[in-house]
Image (tube, rainbow over all chains, first blue to last red):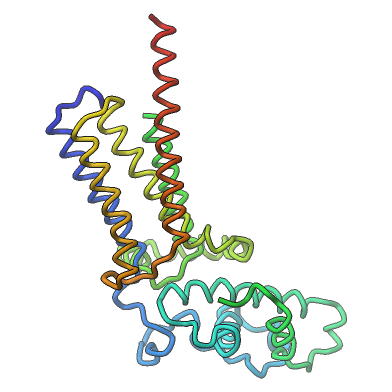
Length: 139
Length: 149
């Protein structure tokens, strides 16, 4: 690289900065990214949409898909610790991580052997306990 | 070339954080869809999902930007060589102004995104690390040359 002419170095630098800016542009929110409140009209389903396990039993939770669990967990968090904190797109990235943590926590609880006898127990009771007692599920 | 390799590794690590654990509303995911890589990316995300809960917020939301800045400084230094030159100062300055300016513009709501002091601190740390790596490699190169002479 030391032996390249000045003009060539400037050209390579210009290309490098274009590539770096393009990479940075890729990490910004895309134009079609919608917020949780405004995306109801969107035809493509977002990760937080379509959760229907809010009143599910432990047995129903166990047999549900991960996407459904994640969307339901995001609803629980959005209605509790994250209420009023979902403003920017970045907030949705953050709540997704917390929703994944909540799903994992609920999964761990319902995986216990004693839960086999409590298949009719409501999973929202378990979730409420976890959300209330945890100190790392908030914004 | 060593600097370039380090820069590329840092860029790849930063990109992997975005691809594996960030939300799918980012522009990069629509690019993947357009070039037909969406299914591979989805598999990668599914494989790495379990790790997300163990990763701290600063790693998910601030580290990629810092690694990008770190890589950029190393790339410009490797293009312009060890010696100080007006061209090198110009391009590194332009890059730093873009990087810091974008964050400040987010704070002023001129750009979409959220201003975060954590991002700024990590960017400062990344710049410092880049300078250290450059100085270390230059010193190593110099001592090797003097050994040969």
